[in-house]
Length: 217
Ligand SMILES: N[C@@H](CCC(=O)N[C@@H](CS)C(=O)NCC(=O)O)C(=O)O
Image (cartoon, rainbow, N blue to C red; front, side, top):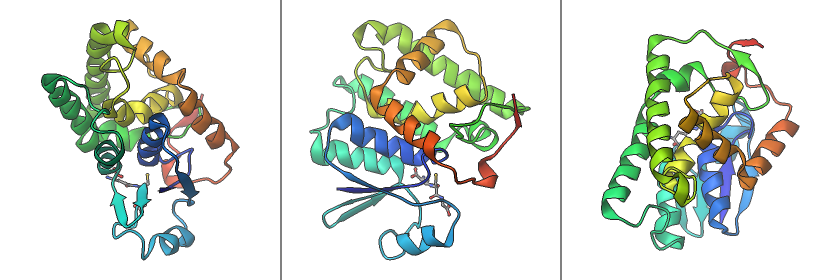
């Protein structure tokens, strides 16, 4: 399998798919394209109709969109185990994952993923409301499932893959959360696969101006 991704410092959507592959222990090669360059679009032309990353190529199957890639990996290679086992928990995990995938535009627009930076930003009411809702999700789930593994539903699931980039955004912009949500963040930041992604991100030097928000702190 080949996973095409963007800059590790900036590409939050790529991180979701990459961490899903890494945590699943599947063999895959990674092709990194620098965002916002003519080479990026030239390389994707003929592979993916969306001209976006992440894109997964598995034989004849091409999947674009981070959540669709997670679902495909789960269906094709993990026998459905990347969602919680109980039907009601599966439904909740999907709802949380979709809430992330289709919402939180305040956080997404005002706090771009920028792993190597330490920044201060003035946040809108929308972004503050997003942060409050994310804090609620993380803390409720952590309080319920901390003893069963520390991920949002105890064991690793696609819901975690969707939220990992947000953890890194909150580190960059120094967002303080309640104790349980902070414990979830600590659990995420201790993940060895995520540490490998962060180490690679820190070696990158390309600047994507649109993702450079706020002032250094
Ligand atoms: N909904 C898509 C969004 C993918 C996306 O917007 N990727 C960005 C990089 S993080 C991209 O490829 N941008 C290039 C462009 O929009 O021209 C997903 O979940 O994968």
